[in-house]
Length: 436
Ligand SMILES: Cc1ncc(COP(=O)(O)O)c(C=O)c1O
Image (cartoon, protein in one colour):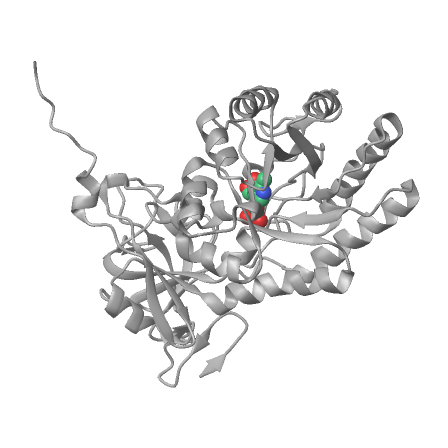
């Protein structure tokens, strides 16, 4: 087996994922197929963990499960000692079915319903991350009705926007998420929550963006939050037990992405928190992070089979595969870029640029606009790399195409963890119209 930084091959030169030949995966499970290299997931998680352990702070790594949700990923994260964040009743339900320890679940979302809050409270979810005043009211009602207590954090919009694609920014003031600091919303929310005996405010949360490839944004975020803490300590004698700094650590999608090690983000964050805690004479809080993309993104591969090809003289050819925007909406949604390989000969020299097109009825369904590939023919298996985050989790049944299977591969073994949808799955909620 040979390895370069981005993929492994076997003696026949085929792409290997988790020690399994990608051609065998395609043959055994069909395409399109989403495959995770589980060892890579563990490696990413452990890189964060080691940096926290070395930094000697209390910490939690809370996997942002919107990046990829399934019973199997919750099992792996639990085994690694992680927490998770969920953003809906559906994600919470999946976590409960996976047997995930409820005290390690944080519940996010900018419009949680009363039913979802009730579900969280009844199941003793660890933390509810409060996002807005409406939610504070709903949670108050739920706590009065159930006579229970819950730990909460306030999601703060610190006014920091990390350098990233504009669709991914959630930390600025003009954002639908969280309580704004400058206008005084955050302080008002703080006072409301502190007045509630059934809510224990354990900390503050912020998330400044996604696919962040430098540490500066996190330094600014920590500074804003620590300034707020200093203010609240002086005014109200309050200090949070936890500072949750969200996710957003960037990954390598293409050669253009200059990634920094996950440990570097954590080292910087810890250094910033310590420095400011000393400067403002505050306790060093536990530091939580919520990585999604960086845990599962590069571990995921999408395997497709080549079908039709269209050549128009003088124009870039279209090579179409059997999946597309239904299993990976990111290129169509925000021009996300990926790289692709031919699974049988990933090391083959590229000889042409093609539009790697999806099978869906939208002109925008192009997985890779300018894919550099060797000559391909119908039946070839193509692997698109680093599709593990926000791919399957955003999948749809557009054009009534069943969603693909998901396979976990590790130590040369492959196991289906989400089965492929069938045509019957597609119509299971349909009812005949009874004309009256
Ligand atoms: C609140 C919050 N935490 C964590 C994340 C995870 O971000 P990423 O997958 O970029 O690490 C997101 C992503 O949208 C988020 O909104």
